[in-house]
Each structure stands twice: as structure tokens, then as C-alpha cells.
Amino acid sequence: MAASLKLTTGKIILSGVFILLIILIGRPIVFLTYTYFADREHKKENLSGYSQDASNLNKTKVDTLIQLSSAGDSAVMQIVGLVKQSAATHKNISIAGAQHSMGGHTISANGIVLDMKHFNYMRLDTLNDVLLVGAGALWNQVIPYLDNYGKSVKIMQSNNSFSVGGSISVNCHGWQPNSPPIASSVRSFRLVKADGEIVTCSRTENQELFSLVLGGYGLFGVILDVRLEVTDNKIYSAKQYVIKSRDYIKEYDRLAATNPNIGLVYGRINVNSEHFMEEAILATYLTTADPVVRLKQENTFATFRRILFRASANSDYGKNLRWRIEKQAVKLMNDKKFSRNRLFSEGVETFQTTDTGYTDILHEYFIPKVRVSEFIEALRKELPGHKIDLLNITLRNVMKDEDTYMNYANEEVFGFVMLFNQKKDKAAEQEMQYLTQRLIDIALTLKGTYYLPYRLHASQEQLYRAYPKARKFFSLKRKYDPDMRFSNQFFKTYGQ
Image 1 (cartoon, helix red, strand yellow):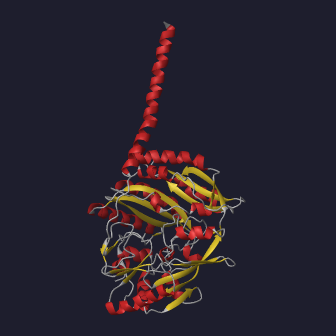
Image 2: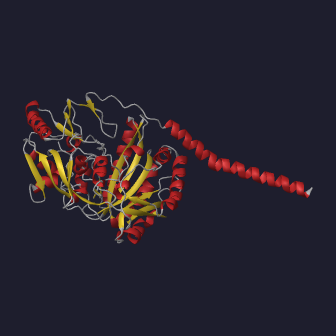
Image 3: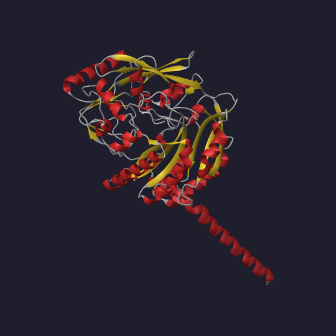
């Protein structure tokens, strides 16, 4: 009898364990499988006669789309002719690369869109580690080219989907620690001005234009090509840490700031509802002496990472599941090795939404190092009160920018890159505008600022507070382009 009771009890326990495993393992599998099948590619909208950017909220009727047919001297003459012709037609010119800005920075209503993507030649000066590159080249073209020479991009964004000309026009930064924005790696560039003249701009030649065009959003002319500093490709070893978000700067200083072997660093704060914004992952990549290997096709588990990410959209369960898995993945990532070029070789396509009813919207706020903890706490209190779907927050270190006129890094700052999943309707857009202005005010209170390539939701007063030289910037725009040959929605919102 006792043996039979023990057997029955054992069966009950095993059944309970089995049911528990189904609950713990079965639900995530079903949830992620559903996301996988729901996450299908949608047909792109026909944009004939219109232009659009990465926001998918700026579909605008334009007069003409000009696609350069080559990258040689004939294309240069085509651009010069177009600029001179616009004086007679009174059609504004906007300049487009990958069009990953989100506020109509590459669009002017009823104007001419100059598509630069085919203007993408490259020549490497191996003696001086300087790359001459056409402004239309995408980083996903540049990286494999440099990889052939054992070289790598010195400063760029965390994804490779953007154009070189676009990157310097927004003065992007990356996850290269202790580095200023990309402007610091620009030796010079050639520019077609509003009168059709081609000039070279550098720190010693046409210095004012140099500072205005870098981070100038295409308002001062057409960038033809750029001379960029490059660096050695290296092998990095990953070291990741789960920390308290309030301790981010303390841990950053201890683990990354003064370590001479640090090559790349970023942080990510949890956005799931369980202990919202209380934890963070600090990801560091340390240089090794391992021989560099050439880029090749590798399994990066991109499909799984995408499904896990997209499963967190509009789902508390998905966000909690994603954060738990990402924390566990820290152990798997530690001591894994990657080349610098491999880490730079992922596009935004890996994570961006394909749901035509929604769009992914970026914000970024630059906060002085000594105020980072205050900003984290302010976000933790502010964000839950808004009807928004926050998908991600990453942190990147940016040193003082000495080169650009519209400078967002007047000292060492940390960029808070925030990604939201937004419904494409009027109510969601109004809520996002309200949130944006609230977050800008918080950033300004902490002596920080915000990034300009995104939705044009800041008030004009906020723009002038965040960028005290903005009025002079727009005045200089009129000096160099009195007939407003170059324009976009950013300029029409704030500059006129």
C-alpha cells in the first residue's frame, strides 16, 4: 500500500513538473512561432511622383526624382547643371541617400529630389589611412571594400544601412567610446554650392562651410565625396555585464572608460514592465591580438533575434520574455570573438517593422555624463504616463565635438537612443509630439539636448534653447544660398 502511494505521488509530481514545463517552455514557443508567421514582408507602397523617408509618415508629392546614372565626371556635371537649372525653374532641391532621417530632411514638397545612391566610388589611400568615397555610398558597401585591405570605418552608426553623405549631414555618432561624432574623422569634402561652383571644404579651406555642412542636413549644397579617416580592422572579445541602471556611469567608468583595450561599447536599459528601467546590460568589446579574418557569411541568428525583438511590440509578455532571454544571452556572449567589420555589418532591416499599420520612430537625447542617472530616473517616472510603445533604449558615449556649427555634444555626453513602435494615425502622432516635447524639456533642464534627424515635434523655442546657434545657422544658410536652392521640411519648419 505504501509503495503504491509513493508511486501515485511520484506520478502526480512528474505530471506537475510536465505541466509546469509546458507552461514555462510551451507558451514562449507558441508566442514566438505566432510572431514569426505574423511577421511577413509587406509590399512596398508605389511612390511614383512622391517621396518618403524612414518614418513612413512623410509621403510627399514632389516635382521630379533625379537618379544619377553614374559616379563619374558626367554625374558631377549633371549635378552642377541641375543646381543652375533650379534657379530658372524655382524648384527646391532636396538631397537623398538612404533616407533614414524621419522628419522630411530629404524631401521638399513639389521640389526636386536628388538621389545620390549611385554616386558611390571608393579609393583608399593606404599610406595615410584615408578613404575617398562618393557621398551616395552605403556603409554596407564601404565595409566590405575596406575589409579587403584590413581596414575599417573609424566612426559610424551601429547599423550599415545609411549613406556616407547622409551620415555626415546628420553628423552621426557611433558606439566607439571616447570618440567625438563622425565629423572628427572627416578630412575634407567636395561640395557643389548653390551657384554651381565646386569647392573643397576642410579645417583650413572654406572652414565656415565645413562646419555648416557637417550636421547641416543638406541645406548648403550637394556633397560629392568625402575624405574619411579609417582605422585597422581588429578582433574583439565580448564582455557583457548585467548591472543596475542607476549605476550605469559608475560601471561604465570601472569597466570601459579608461580601459586601453576597449574598442566598442554600448548599454541597453530594460523596457519591460517588470522593474521598468531598473536594469541594464553594459556590452563591451575588447581588442585582442588574434589575427584578423576576412568577412564571410556567418550564422548570426538574425531571424531569431528579429522575432524576439518584434514579439515585444505592443506586448508586455513579449517585453518580459525578451529581457529574460537577453540577460541569459550575456553568459553566451562572453568571450565570443568578432571582427570590427563583422560587428558593423548588420542593417536596420534585421529589426524594423514590416507592419504597414505601424512605424518605428527614433528619439535621441544627449545628456552630460554627470546627469545621466538623473535622466534615467526622470524617464522611469515620465514614460509610463504616456500611451506609447517603447521598444528599446541604448546608451552610447560621445566626446565633445569641436567641428560642427550645430553641435549637440558641447562636452562629454551619453546619447540615449530610444525606439518606439507607433501606430500610423493622428492620435498616435499627437501623443508622440506631446511626449517628445516633454522629454526635450527634461533634457534641457539637465543641460542636455536632442538629436535633429527625427520627427519635427520640437517647438521652435525648444530648438533655439537646445541649439543656441540655430538662428545664426539659418542666417548663414541665406548667406550661402540666398535663392533657397536647397530646402527640406526641416528648414521650412524651423528656418523660415
